[in-house]
Image (tube, rainbow, N blue to C red):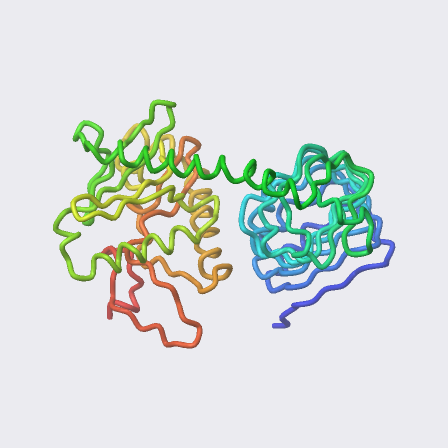
Length: 389
């Protein structure tokens, strides 16, 4: 069998829609379809190309928005070029992607870019000649090898001593306001004070929450702790996992607890339960999680009424959700993470019956230069048979 890694069909007269058969090439790492006559929207099933790291669809006539289903692809790709098309809609990348180059220039993209959370890795960003508006996030322009925001309707603050066009940074034909070194401190205070107040608000909330764990609000109990539903005065609901007291007395508890926090705070995927905060105290130890309205998959399948709602289509989608989360942990995290206990108890469902991976208590970070031998852990019935022999 031939393994196809690199496919370049650029500068031809290819037209009509991009054929779906391309997504059957599961080993592709580089796909270049630039400078053709492809039209219609961008196919959403590009997200199925799990090995893809470079995608170039520039200089075509593609239309419509960037498909939401491509979020799984965007979370792991390095080079993405959709320039010189008719792509519309918003740009919203919710994961700390590994993108090094993102070119969406000369399209019809609108909205703001405040949710563009990939700039920690980006070296080349071109959003020029679109219909973007709203305020730009506070950018460190020196972090980019190339940055082009020109020909939009963006607002926000830029340094007065930075030319609007210098070959490396382009931001002309917008509505920016420049700041000097003298008022830079005021700018930073305006940006970071809300974050500081938000942090203290979270501390106060955690302090109030840990005062009383009423059994009336207990929504689950496991081997390591009990989970409570906690609703704040503003109506926001969280799930609190309080660790059992005997667990906290174990000599290895602190390291295990810190391991769980380290793993969760570094994970950013839509199918992994979010960790909002934690408390490590000699009398009370708990984690503050995103609240999942439908509980665990185990409980859903055990409840006659709820099991009917989880029909076969939803079950397949839940499997896909979990698979995407695991692929992210195994292939897109550095170092890779293995969960080691994927059971129906550790798959949670939100109100839309989407699957989320939870409970990283026995998760491990893999060292690529080590054999990574660990003790056998997990839930009986879910451990791979080869491990149990």
